[in-house]
Amino acid sequence: MVEISLEGKVAVVTGAGPNIGSGIALALARYGAKVACNDINADAAQAAVARIERNGGTAIAIPGDVTDEEQVKAYLRKVIDTFGRIDILINNAALLGGKGVLDESAEFFAKAVGVAAMGNFLNTKYVGRYMAENGIRGSIVSISSSNGWSGTAGVIAYAFHKGGVNNFVRAAAMDLAPYGIRVNGFTPTAPTPDNPDLIAERGPGGVLDRPRANGLGGPTGDESWRRPSRWAGPRAPMVPMGTTGTPTDIGHCVAWLCSDYARLITGCDLVVDGGARAKNFAYAPAAREDLAGPLPLIPLDVTGELDRETL
Image 1 (cartoon, rainbow, N blue to C red):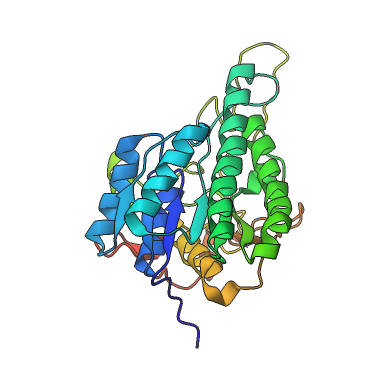
Image 2: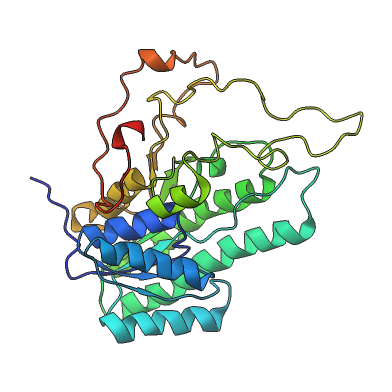
């Protein structure tokens, strides 16, 4: 019988903002880990801590810039000084949004790639060194995206750095395997937010429900030569299971990947996307009402008043 427990473990989650990062941080806490929540926005880091604490977990905020080597070393030292160790690292910090290759600025492209590249590198380097030096056979998970495996219009910087994350995971896994430290990737795709605070602020639904006019694949100008880069009509249920899931679904799986039950899994990518990546280009979706859908969501945020059947 598999009963996931992260009791006695300490986790660091970068980019613990209100959506995927907060969901993973909450899941790790609910499975027993003490969690350090990082974000460049101190309020976002503290909000993730508050969510964990009101669900009975233990957490601290460690705000800081994941691209700044001294800041990374400082907030990791705070984790060790507070909780005594680090067993788990989740590299989630990333810069979202952007434009397509015809319109993206060099400034945004460099910044987005830098956050992903340096965030994954610096945190993995210093957490990996700490684990190796102290004989901790820990787990490191870098959050990728479906955009790192297949092409999507309108997010050229995001696609570039998420693709880089995928091979960073494989290379780092080889570097750290001799120390018993596992490094894996995790690929979600546009989950439906289920953080009550985020829903209260922005309303229900996510990016697939409210695509930005000039962001994810939308037209960016009125020149005569412009061509649409994304279908703008009614969205068919293109995900085979009928839903891309939620950060809670992601959290359950990341917690398992960080547990001792996954002791031989390294250099791999775990996909939670309702079958979106697996389908062929000629996939013909059924009508939503004809889909059975997944099993009901097992909630982690027991303080949130959400209609679980709709997620």
